[in-house]
Image 1 (tube, rainbow, N blue to C red):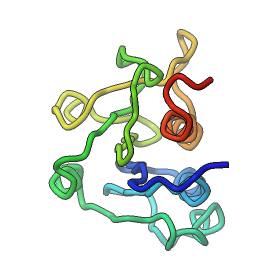
Image 2 (tube, rainbow, N blue to C red):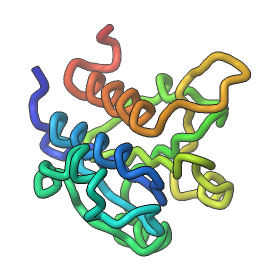
Image 3 (cartoon, one colour):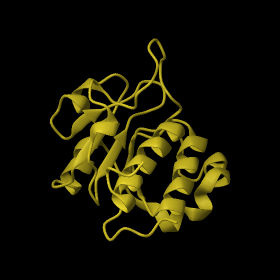
Image 4 (spheres, rainbow, N blue to C red):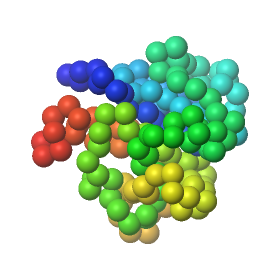
Length: 161
């Protein structure tokens, strides 16, 4: 069973476009103690029916803030340690040693994080390992994999398998 972290992980969605993915991630946050940060522009209204149906009933337990753009988010969390998840960035997310309070940052479903964010120095680009010639994982699947790997390390130690 998971124990609450004294400093929870933050799952950051930059410009998410699909309401059910964001709702599923909100539900993941509720079940794991992670916190959710959204960065505009969003491809939906936070009150969208699909978002509510997929997990908005947990919103008050998981939602931290909505920022108008990535620069505002970074300014609000200047000392955060960020891991920028993207396809084929070189370093595997399994080679990271996570710490309480880390921010796991994900880009929009159709395109991923923009190059200026990946190369802008606000965090370390990492990738989830996949077979070659595959485009990407579903956003809520990728966030779940990354969050649970970080939680596994934080709950049981990086060497626990």
